Image (cartoon, rainbow, N blue to C red):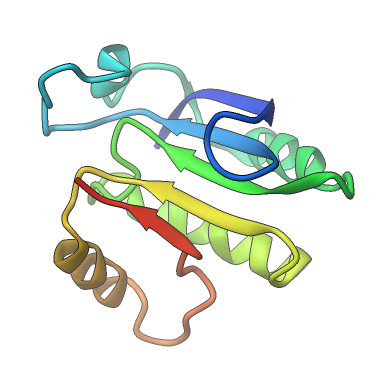
Length: 133
């Protein structure tokens, strides 16, 4: 998975001060897309331990309320496993002190299907809020 951008002090994508992660790759091609450059799965940088560390460190300050995950398409099959892993890391470290918001082009029914498909053992990686079409 590639990441387009990580904003460590975002106030536009959810309540309070948040860390926003923009994921690369989307096949929806929505008219008026806010991030057309993020449609390519090759755009940005590989998400690795360095990216994980940057996100986790940005979440530490008490005034940061949580993580916002945008795209591209976070729930695309090429992205979902790493997004779920990231959500699990946040839950394990911060429990529910930091909220997780996710923006997706999938419908509410498809979101539930995607989350159930990739989470047969536990529910740590389920976002607190998912904004669908």
